[in-house]
Image 1 (cartoon, rainbow, N blue to C red):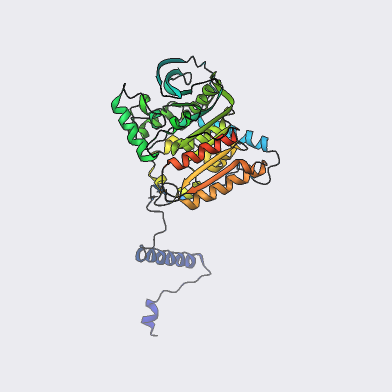
Image 2 (cartoon, rainbow, N blue to C red; image 1 turned 90 degrees about the vertical axis):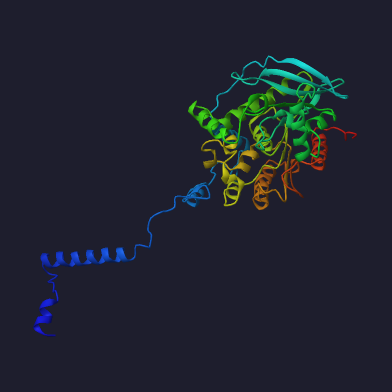
Length: 406
């Protein structure tokens, strides 16, 4: 190398501060050049939202350990249930309500072996509602069923999805309810079929449905937000109202309060196992087509990620403590019957089976394995007549009734 070439080549004395400074400058320049030439190697998070979930959803899922769920470490089942139930109530954002019901029957209709009634009562201290009530003829007291209607994105009818409405008073509503029964219940109203078996049956509208509408798929998100702005919760209000409806039904003079059950389809199934978990008035539960684990529901392609009905069934923060099957398990050791559809696109069957297995462990822990049944039936999102009859026969057995002639 010539002296000229040598003069053009920088040399550094790393033993001096000036030499060290120069070396750091060179390293910095190299780093900047590497960053500029390799800018495509992204080292920050983008996009931030995928499949309607935050990009960091897996990290959030990893934190969901459900610490209040049943485990074999639980030695005092009653204490565990009380603690977990208290956490559910806390998440509902509701206060206890013991408002007198003050019922009034405003219309009646003879339906053969039973009488249909329109009854008005104080569902809570804030809401006086009109409900449909079916009462068998003959001496009581009778076993009873709290019917809980679904969501379905159909808001013009609520209670009329489960019990046939008074058609002469509103022909359009009757036609709408009949179409719903044809679509999901093999052309009959589940409540009327059960009343014909000798059960008192009650169904009221949730906020947004039937008398308590109008609501739309888009407006329900604003309604949920405004519930929060008012220091409450749409899902929590529904939970409180269902518990109150169960208490009203159990207190009726025609009802045997030791034999009161809850039944629902779809969102109504969610409501049914929830009220069975929260209410001592409910002694048995039948839930069709709403059960799965959170992990199995919060996956790309799942209807759950669309959020359309989420706020009716979401208690803020509860999933930090209990998963859906954990909450349902608070109903143990009451008799419980669950149905799912093998082709139900809303509830992935693998996740359903995981949830059922988790629940079955709790009933076994109570020594009541024979009181829990869960079936995956052929078909999709429906509660067909075959499942209804299976459910009603099962309930008769739980309540010590002889098979009802059909």
